[in-house]
Amino acid sequence: MDKMGSSERAGTKGRPASPRDGSAVELVGLSKATVRWLAELNKKGDYPYAGVSRTCQDGTRVSWTYEEWNAKIQASFEPHFWIPLAGPLAPEETRPDLVNRRGIYKDSYGASQPWFDYQLRCNYPIAMVVAPELFTPANALTALALTEATLLSPGMGIRTLDPGDWSYRGDYCNDNDSDDPTVAHGFNYHNGPEWLWPVGFYLRARLQFTSPATRSATIADIRSYLARHFVHLTTSPWRGLPELTNKEGKECPGSCQTQAWSGSTILEVLNDVTRLESVDSQQHQ
Image (cartoon, rainbow, N blue to C red; front, side, top):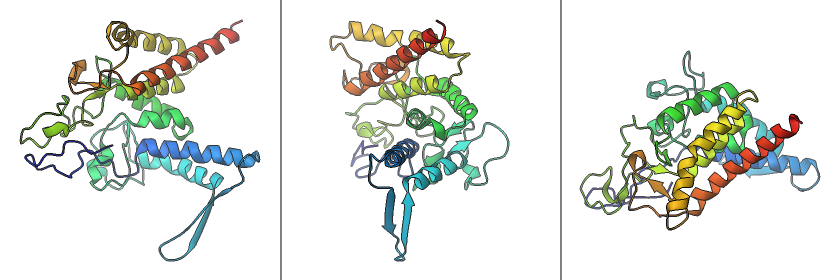
């Protein structure tokens, strides 16, 4: 996430509001998708390199094939990112004292401030879409249900931070010149305001993990939810979807009124819905 809210008056000049400087969950998913793809290309003879090598600080040379790298991410993801709804935590859990939400996937691993890892944010569905094989399906459904209950807004967006988090501030105002460091100059840009582009990944993740028995109901629910986006598209003078909204879907004056990725991720949802409905139709012929 980018640097927001630099305010000398509030004492936040040069200080990142939401650095996410650990191993961010969506970047792990994107890395997994990339090395899996490279391994497949190499295996088919379409890519000449089988892996990578690096020199460590002690001078030793380490080499991994893309297949090995892919397998390492696969094996380590759930133990390091999943916080079970109940029962014992994974042996790999280093800070059980910081667990404040259960039934979630961590936002990152190894952040400079350890509690950042345990925040509930809306980024993990990106990993679900690009690398669904990382996720145990039952755990994925548990996390998505909690996200629907906690982060999905009654408006068009999804909250960028758990409302129960002490850092949560749902209204973005970039001309706030107060001495409140949590909001001055828009310091809370990624700490609560309801962004639209992650909604597409959340909905696609639901489609990814729905079972054949519940697919029709999931699609119907998604179509019903997206009705509000359609109404906005047809009534906005921009004929587009905004960057974000404030708390509970309120219009945000500091938001871009139409942004390509807000609309594009919703188009990807509709493309997935159309594809799945086509498959279902063919199976019933």
